[in-house]
Image 1: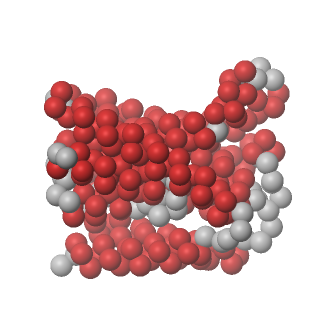
Image 2: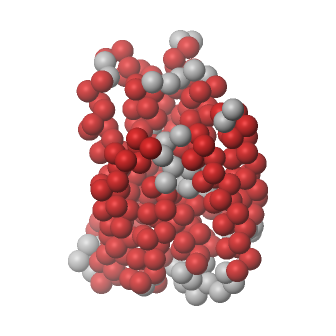
Length: 264
């Protein structure tokens, strides 16, 4: 098997496993890409592209909800759900457009990602012990104020290493969403958020690719889709029975590993 195909498979698995967990896919892709010597401009574009596979996994997993939402446009229930997604989407979209180039230029370093992983892990441990009440037990019962709160929390994920999933899930719990509902709303919010961010990045970098890159990108996309699909199912089962403490500890340890590996 071609070496580049093997690398694409490895990174596709890493992306699919980490994208929807509160552990930062960015940090894992940085380390994995460096370990297998898959770096450079094409590699960065590849890492953005395979996120589309992970997004498609969410759409497929919730295809019934997506279908019923499309069919139900115009009804009060569906309009409320879509408006909540829009409200939660806008803060990070607006701030991201303003700061995108600055973030890419100054914050995408191993040191900043490592510190974000560690601080985020500590934050999860604190939130798990402080937040006790959860009034919302269905995504259709989320208020506009709560949706805005989740959207503001998502802006924290613009800082590399914070984790979009981690920021939105923990933010949702802080605003009264039950653990499983917070996780599901994070998944739904990922669809417009990741699609917009990924499309924006690809439009700026896709011209650097050649036809020879297509097999590698296709493999990464497919592997990312199936690994993400597996993780989403498993993660939903996990959050109904456990806290996020194990992910918090993992973040702290992984952040320390990155610091040890990169920061000399």
